[in-house]
Structure formats: structure tokens, C-alpha cells
Image (cartoon, rainbow, N blue to C red; front, side, top):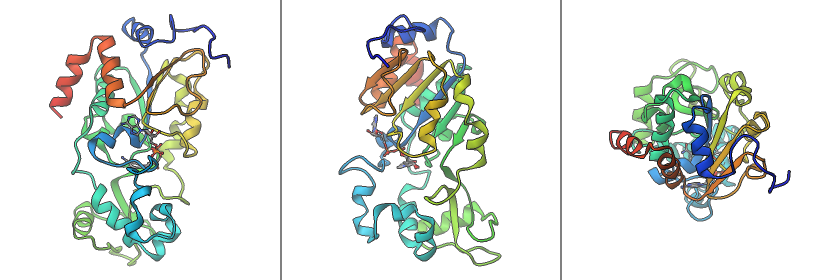
Length: 278
Ligand code: CNA
């Protein structure tokens, strides 16, 4: 695709042109796709950023390789590293970022079609995005069950274990219990496959804080129709976004990026006060 090609849907490939498109009511079905980068400013490290990312800091867990902490066959043999990490990542310790509040604002304005997230931290729910608007593609800490017999495990019990850094066992078969976050080697939730075509219905897609390297999530942008505006707010260019005729890039911090977009739409005060109440 020719990067200098003129825009077809927007008046130009700029933030102001995109804001104009939104203000004129053309963005009624917004699909948002996110990853770990939207939660780093809440204090939760992403996986892959050098030095600060989780994988760069797992040496203390004595893993054979960093990804083993989320590998189902490794977990069966040694669940301790995962539970050490779960102790640090468990929801309730972190405050949603202004980026999470921005997604909530899109919902409040009746514009949010779906939020596809790879995050397991539930910060979008905590910011007030309703569960039925969220596809947690890699699951979340919202539920937990036995990895052998699938029996659900009570939330208050797992909380106690995670706090005490002990390993929960199934009340029925004594199998290992795990939060329903998707490990390497596990299927994605049915919800993901049910909704994966939705990006084709979008009239605006916003991609935030993801390296778009993990499949099949990374294939979601390929469902987007040609000439649907795509906005990328990320520290680096990813997924080929920026080469389409209706792509707008905000390369940098996503909290700063959503503030810029809100400002351009005339929503900044509303966004700041929504976030302040969270
Ligand atoms: P990733 O591969 O670590 O990529 C993160 C992306 O975000 C990179 O492109 C960074 O440049 C970018 N980024 C980091 N900080 C910012 C920032 N402040 N502003 C803008 N961009 C930023 O993470 P992905 O989510 O793409 O990878 C998928 C994995 C990560 C999924 O399986 C998740 O479950 C998993 N994960 C989730 C969490 C969480 O729930 N918060 C935390 C760590 C990892």
C-alpha cells in the first residue's frame, strides 16, 4: 500500500481529521483492541518491553525459559512460579488508567461496539466498561477452575491462596486450580471465536498498547474492511497500521494519546472527571 495515498474516508490522515469524523457522528460502532501497554502506567509491567517487561524480570523465579510461567505443561509440574506472579498481578491492587476510562467514555457515548483485550487484569471492568462489551481474548482472573475436571473454584478461596502464596487444589478431584487466563497450549475462550468477525462491522478501530504479536488476536485487524479508519496509539508501529489509506498514527504513550484525541473531540474535561471518579 502506498503510504502517501490520499485518504478515502477521512479528510486527511491526521488526528484533527479523525476528530472531525467522530464529531460528525460517523463513528457509531467503534472497535477497540488493546494489550498490556494500556496498563503499564497503572503499574502492571507488559511482557516484552526490554528491562521493564515481565519476561526481563522473571530470573528470580528460576524458570527454564520466561514463557514457562504461562505454559500449561510447565504449570502441571510446577505451579509455584505462576502463583508467585499471580500474587503480584491479582486484581484489586491497581487503579485503571485514563486509557481505560477513555474506553468507558466511548461506551457512555453509545459508540463502543466491542473492546477486544488481551489483558487479564480486569481494569476495563473496574473503569466501568460492562462485561458484555468486553471480549477477554486471553481470559482473566474473573473466574477460576480445576485444570483436570473443570469444576469452578470459589473466588474467596482463591483470593486467600493467592494472598498466602499457596497452591489451591480442586475440592472434588484434588487437581490443580488455575484462574481462567489462557496459557500457552490452551484454547482461547469461545467468546473470542464468537465475536472475531465484529471488526468487519466497525466504522472506526482504535488499537492501543499492544505489540500485536500473539496469534490469533493479532489477526483481528485483518477483519477490518478497507477504508475503515484505524487509529494506532502505541509506543511503536505494529501490525502494519499506518500503511492503509485511512490510518492515523499517534506514536507514543497511550494515556497522552487518548488525552490528545479527547481534546480534539472536545471531551477532555469529561474524560478527566470520569477518570477522577474511578
Ligand atoms: P506486549 O507484547 O508486551 O506489548 C506491549 C505493547 O505496548 C508494545 O508494543 C509496547 O511498545 C507498548 N506499550 C507499552 N507501554 C506503553 C504505553 N505506556 N503507551 C503506549 N504503548 C505502550 O503485550 P501484548 O498485550 O501485545 O501481548 C499479549 C500478551 C501480554 C497477552 O497474552 C496478555 O495477557 C499479556 N499481558 C497482560 C498484562 C495485563 O493484563 N495487564 C500484563 C502483561 C502481559
